[in-house]
Length: 299
Image (cartoon, rainbow, N blue to C red; front, side, top):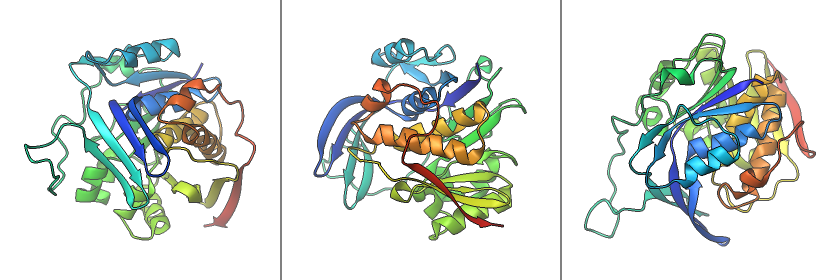
């Protein structure tokens, strides 16, 4: 069975969506959502490298219950606890613990912590058919035969732009940026995706929220959309869909079909609070009905 590696962080989330309600103490973070999204492509095994917190045993129990290999995950004392606030004005992620004795949040420059890119055991990388690396600060140590997908880190991307992407990606990789990440390169997000593809010689799957996904390859551009999606809450849709794309590539799908799997898994994530719908879903053998792909141009 092809194996997808997932590398990322964990968090416990308090979710608040304007006009739709709230859910508290939800298991979250890129590693959870990506592992759950990857397992929803039939025929793929998932191996996760993350920090498993001593103060929250539900993460290990969840991975074990779904057959997700956590043998490369290292123990850590605590897990970040976050407010994720989704409103018409935008989305914000705030640490539950106040940064100071003052209740009112003050603005300050965001700096990536020095330990934001944790050490990953060497045993994580062997036999991976594909890898999704979430918010890396350096190039992953994957084998040349492993298909690598990069979900960029917003902080160094904002600070260093294309230089950051050159540090973490190589020709032939798949970059999976969000609309917010692309806007840090160019206000025209499609132009940003094309620039990344051209300069780095990578394929780009641009995740553009309700517009769907734009797939940019050296010779073609496609758009993949979901005609039947219903949104209850958005947390985890990006991470889970990115992992599903890499999982589909691992079983031999072309990039457009892989993006259709990604949009299908995003539909599942969007149907519930946090990870609940992803946990309950069964693996997909094909993209969901209502997910369509259309070629937009040939280069």
